Amino acid sequence: MGLNIRILSGKRQGEEFKLRAGITIGRKSADLLIRDSKMSSLHAEVTEEDGQYFIIDKGSRNKIVHNGSPVSRLPLEDGVSFILGDTTFEIFYVNTGDVWEEELSDYLKQIERVAKNEPKEAYSFFHSIHLKVISGPDYGTNYKLCYGPRIAGKDSLDLFFHEHFEKEELFVIEEKKKSLVLRTEYPDLFTVNNSPAKSENKLADGDSISFGKTKVRIEIEK
Image (cartoon, rainbow, N blue to C red; front, top):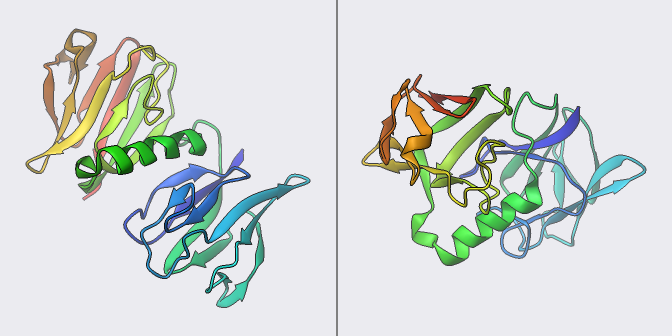
């Protein structure tokens, strides 16, 4: 088991990450960037002391709000919630394999690349998307996607699958004209709903993607 952090409000609501010491949260000068006008540029940092995680205020105007009161230091345990600016966060335990335990520092490098180099490509999905691995080496993994495009591949460190991990861009999940689309340069590796894949494939709730021994079910929250 391990501690994860979930964003409960704002544009990144629903996103979950593995909690790690050293991660900073803020509006501009931080690892985890939140578009929140009431959050400081560098608002808080996660630290660890003797196995106990804390979130520490970094000199922000509004501090860390817990149970309605501003604090400068807060122990992080299962069930703890707190507010930075106008954004609410929650800490929760997760069993390894039940959901995606993201390596946050690597993931944030991908977010930074998209934000700095390809700002026009980042957008919110019309619904939250779940990629649930139902067979194969990554069985039990659940990726919740709130925005796109999302890339699976060696260099992206965004969506990771053990099979064909050597491909720089195995596939991309994106939105086109309010439809969810899987795009790949390797259609011969894939089937969609047990039929041969194309370079571009429309996806609907309940559809499945297969490659190698891996099978992924698409679930769309409506």
